[in-house]
Image 1 (cartoon, rainbow, N blue to C red):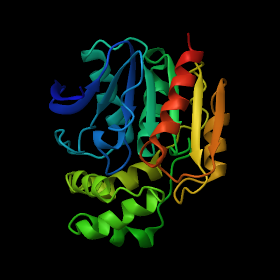
Image 2 (tube, rainbow, N blue to C red; image 1 turned 60 degrees about the vertical axis):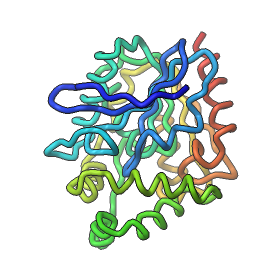
Image 3 (cartoon, rainbow, N blue to C red; image 1 turned 120 degrees about the vertical axis):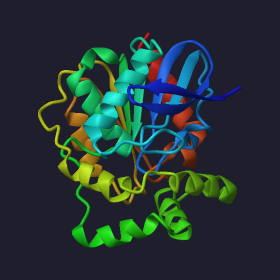
Image 4 (cartoon, rainbow, N blue to C red; image 1 turned 90 degrees about the vertical axis):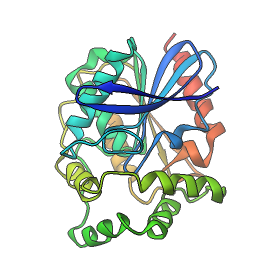
Length: 257
């Protein structure tokens, strides 16, 4: 049974979900995300799967800043506190940048890396005219729900989408524009090759945020990476096609053995 827990990390708390026993797998959500994004794919056979909520998100504590490297440092501390040895790290969207940051600076921490529709090593630029719209998300749940529907174009479960929207509204107010600014300044070009373990980059062809060129740039940034292009999903395969995501994960994990 999947459990919800909280743990003290540095000067705050981090909420996380956990399921199973075996090889550790850590699932890192994207912007406005939460552990709920992974709730349908945590039953990976032979794995201890953990889905933390980064500080500033969901039911975790708040920080004074919104910064990719800071999020990565908290993720590393979370892994250390729980004694997770060489987990498979999985990052979605903004979470892709977070795991990229962590392993560029501490490549010894993971046994494998999966990036799902993640920001490229050169970051993700948000047009300046979009920032007033981003600020509207802070107080308008209906607007937020429409935005989440756009990045999960094949998700048909309206109740599940409602849950994602509810969790998104828990994000720290300063993180709405703050996370977009953090992704703008994120630049790990030329700094990722220190992680030489297996890497899987997954990209959905209906993604309206990450382009195929960005996904290819991410794959070429690692010496041992493979790119998987998915025809029938958008930005979020783990909620749009959970069975497909689990198959990809189990195939990847089995290749590590």
